[in-house]
Length: 467
Image (cartoon, rainbow, N blue to C red; front, side, top):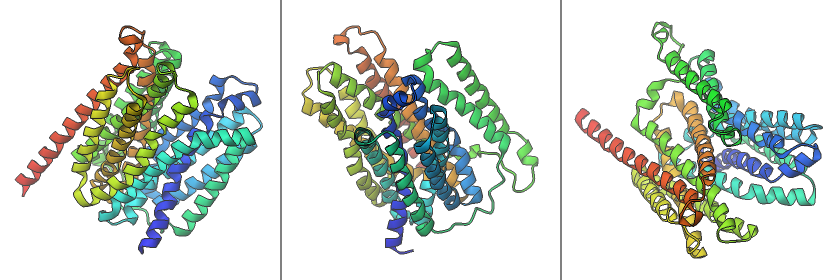
């Protein structure tokens, strides 16, 4: 495959990352109009967004495993088609229940192509070009997040909320046609076992409990019996899943029978640390994106439009730094870029931890840009590290676990930011909650950085001894 063909494949795959985030951003701003159309409440209409994100998070590992079993191109391209069908059903939906059901269909499609996109990139690009190629996914994610709310608002103002779904239908149709034409066919991995249904069910039950508790904890109350039950479901499902995967039955099973997830994958320090880095950095970034607009509006009295423009510094910076970091990681290796990104994020979070109305606006803009830049520096080499340490037979599963880690980080960040903002305004000019979220995130990022240093040095020492 020549470079031109690889470029077309790369942009076709990355279009899925853009679509998912464009869709999520569009409908946060459309909820009021949708609720009015169906004579419903905002919390009920919120399930249009919540159900979509729930389904994606829960199905990602299953779709990644199916990609390894059936062929990643097949699962990826079917995902585009299912997403398109879901968008079309949403545009034609006659009721709120029908709309939520159609969004669930969209979520199934999005899970299919999100779970396999990085695995396809790795299979198409040689090792020395993977960092740059994986970095472009982050660029498209940021672009979708940035464009979604504004484009959704324009379409609602000029036409109606249904026009958002018509646009998604058209874009996903184009993406599907390009994917069918340009993404090269791949054969399923011969050594991959059949789907372990009980293991997948335990994993899905556990993840459903966690995702639902984190998303609805603030609404129901973190100490409410409903949330406690959900955390119990998560814990019980996790114990059952781990016990099932480690069961001696797999040693007695014949060839071609493996658990849903080989837990040995996470014994590799690069894989496990990379996944933790993904969760913590996305948590830090998304909690900051939640609390900073509140600070700008409530403490500095900035107009909403101005606050929106200021916050655009984050995705714009990510868009610029992500491909640069990917290219440099191909030349310098993953460790220097990961270290630089984590240190830059730590510095930005420390300064934001002393946030006050006395901060000049331009200084806050600089910090927001640095936060986005640090995320752009971290993500490509981190993805390249994890995917590069994974065997070819498990690329789809690990690709989906990375995507799940991003979603979990976003959910944890949203939950943590909301919880801190709900703290009583005690001292520090009523900025307790604002400062606590940055203190928490700083501590977590520092712990992750130290863990990464130890794991890298231990890994090098182990390699030296073995040689």
